[in-house]
Image 1 (tube, one colour):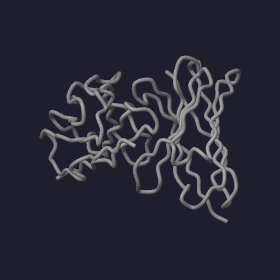
Image 2 (cartoon, rainbow over the protein chains, first blue to last red):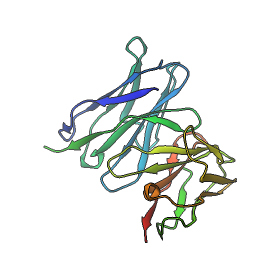
Image 3 (spheres, rainbow over the protein chains, first blue to last red):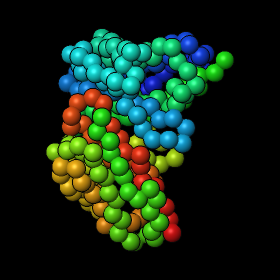
Image 4 (cartoon, chains in turn cyan, green):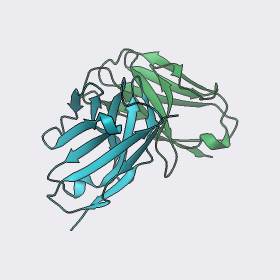
Length: 115
Length: 108
């Protein structure tokens, strides 16, 4: 069974860069799409972007200018960078694997943007 | 952006009853629609993909139907563990992949 685990700081200052990593265990990072999805407190789900195992990326247009997702295949992990964060970026960030649906999720990491 | 609108926002039912949740897309998604269940403090769980295919390990009481712009998730006979928030999600027309705003299924 594939397992995903998010890691990174839980507190980021306004205007700084949010950096998170998702480590995949129990399976290879090949052959699937790997996404970041976030959920603001008490709100719904927002897809941030994905990276395909070949390295191809696609981002939510609403975040595209600030988002980078990268792959670290030898270490079976992928990462999210979100620049110039504001309080609106406070959320629980999930990493997830998908092909026809998001079928494997990490437990989520809560990130607060605050000085 | 393909906007997904779920209805109702809240559904109050009793265990043993049948639940019918709706998801309407602003543009066609053909059959590229999925449904998820989320419980408090947990990540969402994939229930249905490609509109009607049950994900691995999902009980048969969960079924999905629809195509184009109108989709339905049906839970044939509610179990106590089914009370949660349900989201639909489309992957049809490229980025962004979008989610509906959710339907809260609560115990009556």
